[in-house]
Length: 164
Image (cartoon, rainbow, N blue to C red; front, side, top):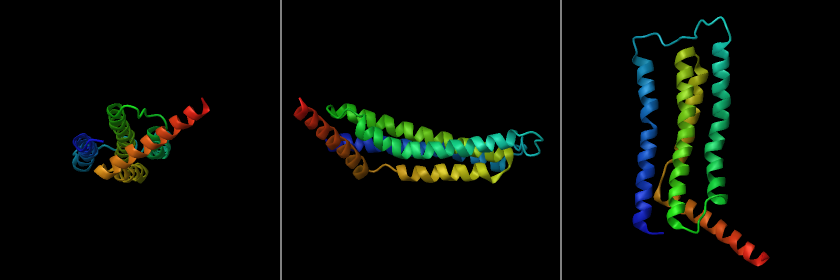
């Protein structure tokens, strides 16, 4: 893999990673320093707060493993590695999708935290942000993940050629 291409990939991934934190930080500042009462469902007689909290917990439970493990599975099994540029584009797109999934979990947790005034949403947001820290892009990590995917696809193509 060309070093210039790898450096551009890592730079793009780092920009995506930094941009991930802007919206949750904005929502946090808005929630903490707002003069408006954001606790819409604090004294809710119905079950709305309960349903929101349950949805947030379930969404976080699904999205964190999906973002972390499914990324690796798709990268090793579904990405076409015969073309290096296609592989890099796929890697970049998968990284963006992974951050979007974690972003949605973080934002839903923060919104539920501020609207229900209950810690459950805050904990879910912290879990999603902690999971994001496992996605920190680096040159070595990108090179390793692209190499692992290339090796697995090469071994599959060798096995197919043997069967034919």
